[in-house]
Length: 521
Image (tube, rainbow, N blue to C red; front, side, top):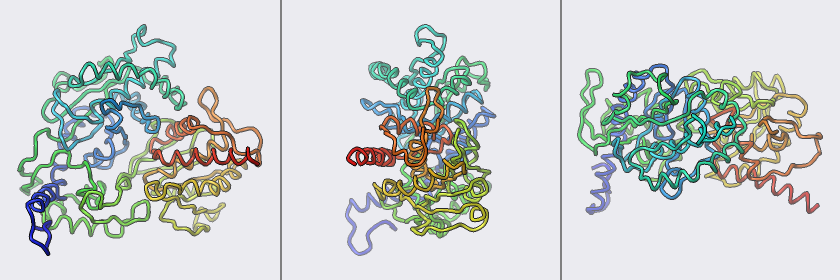
C-alpha cells in the first residue's frame, strides 16, 4: 500500500493509519465533492435568483466560481463559548439577503448533519442563528423600537436539536452583542434602511427537506428574510458508491464533508483548479489523481509567494486560505462584491476617502485608477521600485511586503511606519492611493485599518472625517475598540477584508507604542 513505510515492517497502527489516509485520499474527496455538488445545484434551482454563498473554507469546495462568500466559524457557537465576532461581521450576507429576499449558504462537515435531529457543533447550528438574531436586534434598536413591543421578530431561532437551556443562556447575551455590533460597525445604519423583514435561518440537507417540501419555491410570502443553510454532504457514514460522470462509472469511497480539513488531503490543490480539471482528476483514478494535482499546481504560487507543499499529513501542507481568493468589492457600501477569481473584479474604494483596496488579481485595474500603488504582497520580495506601465506613468509603485501573521507575528508592526509615511502624505495631498494585498486579504485589511485610524475619525453617523491638522500633528490615540470600528468601515466597503486577530493586535500595538513614545518624549 502506498502509505505504508517502505523500510520497516508495518505495525497494526501503520496499517490502520494507511487505510484511513487512503480512504481520505484526493480521489475519494474529489468524487465526494462532485457528488454533493449535485445537491447544491438542486437547492439553487429550487430558489432561482437567490445568491449562493459558500461558507469558507469548507463550503468553498462545493460552489464553483462563487460570486460572494462568507465566513462563519463554528467556534463562535460552541457550547459555553458562544460569541459574536466583531472581526467577521459578514454584513454582506445581510445586505445581499435584503436585496434579493434571502440567500443560500453552503457548508459541509465531516461528521454530517441529519435534520431535524442533530448533535453537530457547527456554524449552521448556532453561529448563524446567533448572528441573525444580533443583526435583527441591532436594526430594531436603530429604528427606535424594542424587541418586545415591535412586530419585528428579533428573537433567537435555533434548530430543534439545541437544548432549551442552552438557547436561554445564548438569549441572555444577545443585547450585549447587538450593542457591540452597533459600536464597531457604522454601516449597519444603511442596512436598517434596506432590510424589510428580519433575518431567520432555514435548514436544508439531503435527508430531510422539511422547509423545502412545505414551500412552493417562493420566498416572498414569508414573514422573514430567509437564510437557507444547505448542508452539502450526506449525514450517513462512509460508504462505497459509484459516481456517474457522463458515460463514466467511477467507483469511490464516499467521504462526508470531504471539503473539510483540506490540509490533510488537497496537497495544495485549490477549489478553482479542482473544478477546472475535476474530470481529468477523476479519470486519473486513485493512483494518478495526486500526481496530476501536483502537476496542475506546479508553478502556481500562493499569495505568500509560496508554492504549495505536497505533504499529506496533518499540518504538513501549507495553510490554504490562499486557495479561496475572496471577491473584492464593486464599489463603496456593505455587500458590494464582484465575482471571484475568473470573473470581472474591480478594486474597492473606502467611502469618503481616496483609498482603494485590491487583492492580488486586481493589480492591473488598480494601476489605472490611482496615483500610487502600495504593494503589500509577500511575493514582491524586499526590493522597492517603480512599476512599469500605467502605474509608473503616474506616481509609481512602492513594495512593502508583509508576511502572513502565522509566519511573522510582527511583520505588519515593522512595516507600518513605512506604510503610513508613504500613504498618509499622499492622501492628505489629494492623491489617490491603492493598496494591493495577497488574496487572503489579511495584511491588506490590517494596513487599511491603520491608515484610516491615522487620518480619520468616525463621527456619530458612522462616516469618516479627516482629523484636524496636517502633517506633523502627531499620532492619534487609538484604542482596541477604535481598531474594531475602523475594521467595520473597511469591512463595510470590502467584505473580503478579514484580518486575523494577530494583525489587528499589531495595529493597536503600533499606535499604543507611538503614544507611549510621545508621552515619554
